[in-house]
Each structure stands twice: as structure tokens, then as C-alpha cells.
Image 1 (tube, helix red, strand yellow):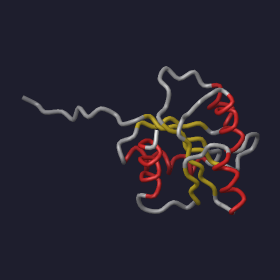
Image 2 (cartoon, rainbow, N blue to C red):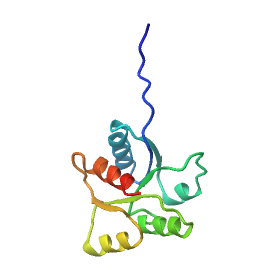
Image 3 (cartoon, rainbow, N blue to C red):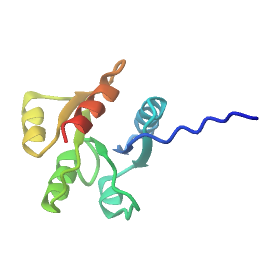
Image 4 (spheres, rainbow, N blue to C red):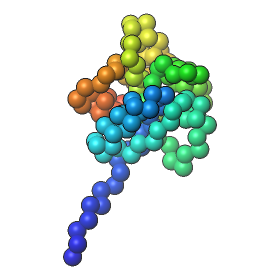
Length: 129
């Protein structure tokens, strides 16, 4: 009898970032931790997506052309979404952190991310809901 790896994919995580290298890196890190990952390179594509199953968490870059991570969060909250949100940014200032938390983000992380920082933030966001 041949044994196969029949692990079920973990929770679905959405990653929105307009930098394709960062998008690939975040996707790789999350998949290596067992998450099912869907990616978008802009906020409008994510907001307009018709996913068959809602994601468990979204990771949003802040500095993107068109819509910032805070813009996306505000649009989601206007729709009544309680989706856990994590912001990533290359320049986290106290003002940005404050605005992100007020917009409904569960965590704000500064790039580059190290070690288990991203996975730990996702797990914390998932367990808080």
C-alpha cells in the first residue's frame, strides 16, 4: 500500500502587495507554514474578487498605488467584514500604526519580516476572532 500525504490545506490567507518580489516572499513563507494562500497585486482586485470561500485573514501592504492598505481595510469594514487584517509596510511610523489600528488592523508589521514574525501574527489574528 502506498502512503500519500493527505494533509488538508490550512486556513486561507489573502496577501495584497504590489511588489511582486515581496508578494512571492510572503506567499512562500505562509505556504511553508501550511496556509492556503491567495495573492492579489492591488486592493481593487482583492475587493472585487468573487472567492468561493471567504479567507480567514488578509495581509495588506500599506504603500500601494491606487488604494493603500488602510483604504482597503476601511472598504472592508464598511461592508461589515470582520476579517482579521495584518498590515505590512516598509516604513511603520507611530502615526501609521495608530491609523492602521483605528482602521481595524489586528497587527502592524514592518518589512523586512524575520523568522516566525508573520506566521505568529497570523496565528494571533486568527485566534483573536
